[in-house]
Length: 66
Image (tube, rainbow, N blue to C red; front, side, top):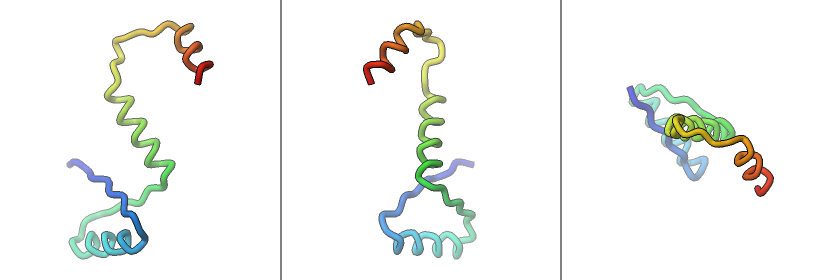
């Protein structure tokens, strides 16, 4: 089954959504901002083109310019 990620803007919204999910008997998991970022990076990594090979020198040059 697919999942959905919801980011409430306020504590009140979080409490309301939590109560609604509990009433509907829907399982909910809470993640912190760092875990949310890791999830986004994981999704991007899955979508990346792994067939293209980039030379190490080009990666190093890009890292140094950042």
